[in-house]
Structures are given as structure tokens and as C-alpha cells.
Length: 275
Image (cartoon, rainbow, N blue to C red; front, side):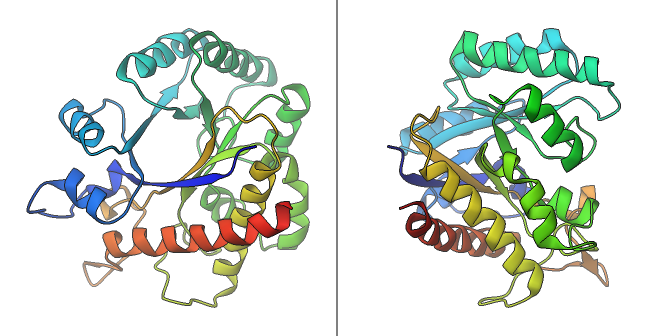
């Protein structure tokens, strides 16, 4: 049986943070993270440093054409990465084109023995829940990185009933084996969370994450013996983090740790649900 949660720091979140006295990798390890999700292309010096400290390492990538899947998977294996999260396509593909991309990802994952978790991300094949559920009907072996703020904000999940949307996306939840931790509200996809935050949108993300963990814990044969949670909080330069009077809304280092704390609470709650 599977049974563990691993919380990683996302390398993209370093943008604008620091300096760190002994470098960012040492700071990440000292903060209690289990590993790092690197970005493509991988910082090999940092990757080697993470390994020296016993941290787990995974990566990400984008696949626009079916023939790109194999080389990306092979490169990740060569780098010794545990898995990749994938931006698949641009969302403008017809169903046949989308199916070819999905088949390429599934084949590459099997051929090279590495999990490739496609993301629920805007501007990708899985940018909306209805089409994603339809693709799952054709390809039930798909496994996902749940980057749910894209749907929560981009598809305004509270409009028309959050619980109704949550039930509809249950086939996705059952296949989530990686989570990008970011909390959004109905109007902004990355917002600061306070200690003990009781906002409705925070409760909604807690419910989504807990459901994902519970279904993972019921999986008798997962690709990995752990599920990964990575707090992916991005800088104002790409318009994720909000700014007020020219100042970023929150400290992303502190917020990442807060989201990890929430994820661990959700995993503990899910352990009870999965029994």
C-alpha cells in the first residue's frame, strides 16, 4: 500500500527571493522540505546539491508535438528525476490531435519508466474540466498534476455550485498523483493565506486536496510510493502574485511553508477517510 506525502519546494518560486547565506538548496533543506521540483532546463549544480543533501528531485516540461514526449521522458530519466509534470498542448487541439498527444505521453511514460503527470493548467489540453473528464473516458490510465487554481479561478468553480463541480471532476481527483499547491479565489488565482484562514476558497482547496490524498491512499498500485505536493507560488513578473502599491502581496517563502502545513493537515485528514 502507498502511504506517504512528500512536500517539495518549487524552483520557480525562488524568483526574487534571497539571498541565502548557504545557497537556496541548503535553505530549502533546512526549512524541512523533502525535495525540489526543478524547471526545464534543470540547474545541474543545484540538482547535484540537492542529491548531496538527500533531497528528492523531480522536474517539469512542455509537450506540443507527439514526437517530443519520448525525448523529454528519456532526458528526465538521464537526469535521475523521479517524475515530470507536463504542460500538454495549447488547448486548441481537436479531439484527434489531443488523443495523439495523450497517447504519446502514456507511451513515453511506459517506455522510459517515469511518471508523466499532465497538468490541469490554462492554455493546455486540460484547461477545462469537461474536456478533461471526456478524455479520461478514453484514456483512464491518465494521471494528473492537480494545479487546481487554474480551474477554480479560470473556470469560476463557485459559480453554479462548487460541490456540483467537485463531484463532476471526481474522475480527475481519482487520478491526481502530484499537486501544485497554490490557492486562488474566484477572481485571482494566487492569493495570500493567513494562519488559520477561514475564507471559503481556502476551505474549498482543503477539500480538493484532501479528496486527492484520500483517493491516492486507496490506490493499490501507484506508480510512486508517495504523492508529491509542491507549493508553486510564482512572482509578479508573470502576473501570478498580486502587487499593491508596487509591493508584492506576501512573502512567497513564508507562504510556501504555510501551504505545506495545510497540505500535511489535509493528508492527515485523508488518512482517516481512506480507512
